[in-house]
Image 1: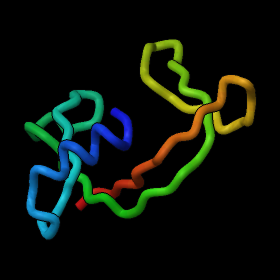
Image 2 (image 1 turned 120 degrees about the vertical axis):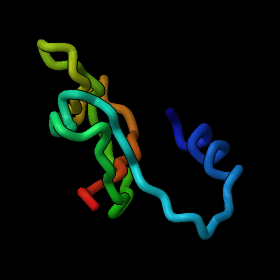
Image 3 (image 1 turned 180 degrees about the vertical axis):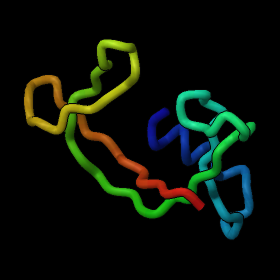
Image 4 (image 1 turned 180 degrees about the horizontal axis):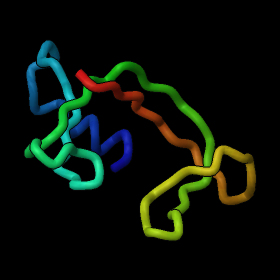
Length: 79
C-alpha cells in the first residue's frame, strides 16, 4: 500500500478516531489469541531495498543502492 492509498482509506473516517494495527498472522500471535493489537508510535521516511528472506518473509535492506526506494515506516508497539 502506498501513502495515497492509505490516505484514501483513512479519509473515510472521523479524523479524531484512534488508529491501531492488528494481525491474525500465526507467526506473530500467541497460540491462545485470535489476533494481536499494536499501537502506532511514529512514522518516518527512509530509503531501503524491499527484499524477501529465504523463508519468503518480507524484509528491508537499509543500504543505499540502485534498488533502494523511498519508504514510509510506521513504528508500532504492543498496546
